[in-house]
Image (cartoon, rainbow, N blue to C red; front, top):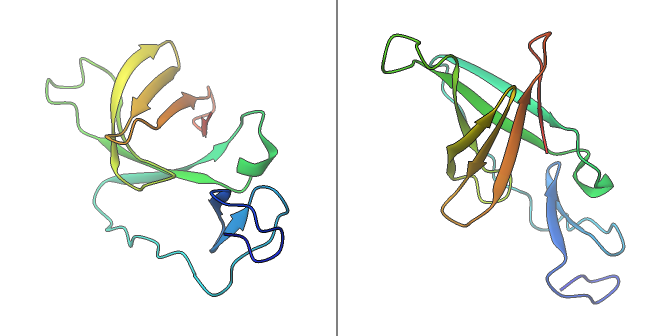
Length: 121
């Protein structure tokens, strides 16, 4: 429960502390524990490019992995869920966009721009 506005279940992870989506209050008593990533392969941070202002500070960790069939499928990604930090499985690829889902049913769409930058929605 938010100590400022007393709303329940309104916390998002944005930055280093949980933030209330109703009033913007940050809970400094409970810092977010971030994963430490090893330097295996290429790792990118995809910025949020959607319509919700509350996610503007969120970044998604995207790992570029080797294709099991000699790159016939193109570039493959492993994505860490921005909410529960589970590894997300890729589902549908449409041009430069690819949808991912985790076991908690969160979904993320990664878009690969022509200049190589990654965005998520």
